Image (cartoon, helix red, strand yellow):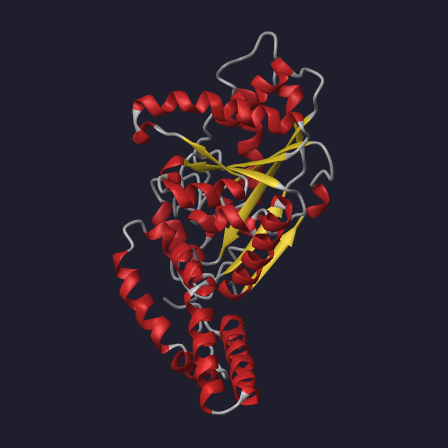
Length: 350
C-alpha cells in the first residue's frame, strides 16, 4: 500500500513539475544502477525543487534526508515519513537534537543494507550561487558506518548536477545530469578510516563541479555572471559553460547584450492569466512575504499543484450548474491547454 501511495505522489509531482518548468531535460540515466545500495548526491540551489526533481527522473525508490524543521507538525510529519523522508538534525535545531542523528544514520545504514537508494545534498544547505560549496562529511560517515557493519556490501555514489537557467523566475528550465557511478568502497578503509574523508569528498566534489556550473573565483563572481549572461550563456549545458568560465578573461566587457524576441503567444498568455486571476492574486500576495527567496519556486510549485487545479475545478463545477456537463468539460480542457501553452512558451519572467 505504501509503495502505491509513493508512486501516486511521484506521478502527481511529475505533473506539477511539467507545468512548473518550460523544459526539463535528463541525461545519464544509464549511469544509475538498477539494483544495489545507491547514494544520490546532488547540488542544492532550488530548495524542495531539487529534492523532488531527482526521484521523479529516475526509477529507483529513494529515501530522502530532509531537514528536521519540516517535521514539526504531527500530520505533516506522518505524510513526509510516508514519502520516505527522514529528518536530519542541524545545530540550529538545538544542540540536544544532534544526538538524534545517530538514530538517523543507523536507519540509513539499514536502508543501504537492503540495497535501496538514499538521496543526500552533501553541501548541507541550499543557496543561489552557481558554485559547489565544500561538502559536508555526513554521507561519508554513513558509508563508513555501513561498511563497518556490512564490509562486503558494494555502495555506489551517483553524483547529480541539477542546473537551472533561472532559479527564481517562471517558467524556468532545468537539466539534470546523472554522472558516472563512484564505488565508495575504494575510498573508505572501514578498519583504519580517515575521519576527514578527504579522498571521497574530493571525488564527489569534482564530479559535481563537472556536472553543473562551478564558479570558483568568489572575488569576481558577480562580474563573471554579468559576462556570462551578456553572452546568452546556456546554464543548462554545464560542460560548455564551465569552459567559458575558464576563458572568461579573454571575453571583452563589451560583449553583445541579450536580444529580446517577440513572443507570438502573448495573447494566449493574457487569456491564461485572466482565467487564473484569483490564484495569481494570491501568488502576488505570497511572493513578497517569502523570507528565504530560495523557496520561491517551492511555493510556486505548491500553488501549481493545489490552488490552481482547485480553482479550475470550482469554475468547472459552476459552469456545470449554470450550463451543462459539455460546456464544463470544454472549459476545463481549455484551462489545461492554456496552462500548458503558457508554461512552454512564455519568456522567463518574475
